[in-house]
Each structure stands twice: as structure tokens, then as C-alpha cells.
Length: 146
Ligand SMILES: [Zn+2]
Ligand SMILES: [Zn+2]
Image (cartoon, rainbow, N blue to C red; front, side, top):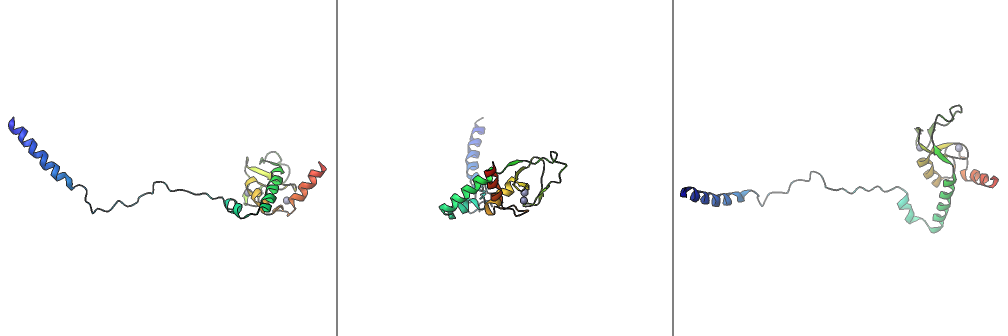
């Protein structure tokens, strides 16, 4: 009985001393396997950068241009609705075929483009990329007739 108690106490002391050898002070930190949170930036090319460089006059002109672009009719590409007519099936800006449900923009010259393709294009050049017809002139004339 008494022997058990004594021997146990002695073992405890020796165990405590031995267990200290677990972590070595000179051990190098583990190599970076994966960085925990990498901030991913998605800078929209053109927009954030240009906003600082534009003069107030240019910003007004761009705002007017955006207003004109917003007045252009837009819709959803539906190949079935106008199958008889030989319609444009490809967006010449991104060279991709239109797919059903794609948001598209109709220009006054009856050419159509992806909404996401033609809007930035019109911000740079207010002409149809296919026929080079000035979009604003056609748009303004339709305003006056209406
Ligand atoms: Zn496109
Ligand atoms: Zn056109």
C-alpha cells in the first residue's frame, strides 16, 4: 500500500522534468503553407483610375454621354423572335456569339452588341463598331422626330 504511494510520487517528479524537452528554442517556425487571407483587389480598369485624372468638364461630358447611352434601347438576346431576318449573331467587340438571355444594346443602325461590351466602347467612341455610323447623331435625330 505505502509502497505504491511513494513510488508514484517519485515518478511524477521525474516525468515533469523529462517532458520539458518537447519544444526546442532554436527550432525554426513552420514554413508558410498557405497565407491565411490574401486580399484580392479587383480594380476596374479605366474607372477608378480615370476618375482622378478627368477634369470637371470631361466628367460632365462623360455624364452626358452615359445619359445618352442609357437612352439606347436594350434588351435580352432572343434568337427565336426574329429568325426570319438574317441577324447579327456575333458581338464584334468581344467576338463571341450571342446566347439566349444575354443583355444586349440596340444601336440606331440596328446593330446589336453585348451591353457590357458596347457601353465601354461608346464611352470611348460614339460610333457603331460595325458600320462606324455615329450613334449620337442618329440618336439625336430620333429625339427630334419624336
Ligand atoms: Zn460582346
Ligand atoms: Zn452599326
